[in-house]
Length: 198
Image 1 (spheres, rainbow, N blue to C red):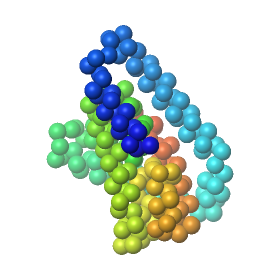
Image 2: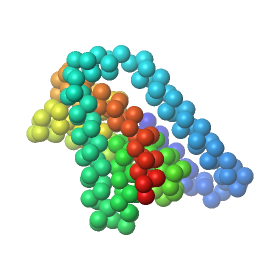
Image 3: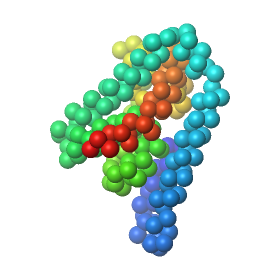
């Protein structure tokens, strides 16, 4: 899926100059519809997943502390990064608020801010997922099972869940799934909120 999205992005970049203006002007409406459809689909998945509720009942506060710490770490890290980049702190933190969900963060930032920030949001969160795939086993071994949940952010509920499961244990896998769900729920709320604050 990651490669399919990257190929689609590259095709879009190269075909952009050749598209008629009438089509380009209608892209905002298409993007809005696609985003709503994507969030609706995530809502359906969450509504059908009973494991989340049972984990929340069993683990209690722990199940919510992990994703909140991942969120705080992501936001703090991108805020510190803004001092060494050309982006404002608001722009950098908005990118970090994607929590690894590149397929939503990119279009959302393009619509709310600019195509440039949308591209950065897409690429930064894509690289977060790719890097997490490489480092999860090492993090689990050196820093512990719960630490292995953090690198992938929102992707802990889907793409990187098999890796986390293999590198840790069943209990951590459930916590990783819940963490990914919570972070996914936060993205469409936190990203627009940060952009509005700027």
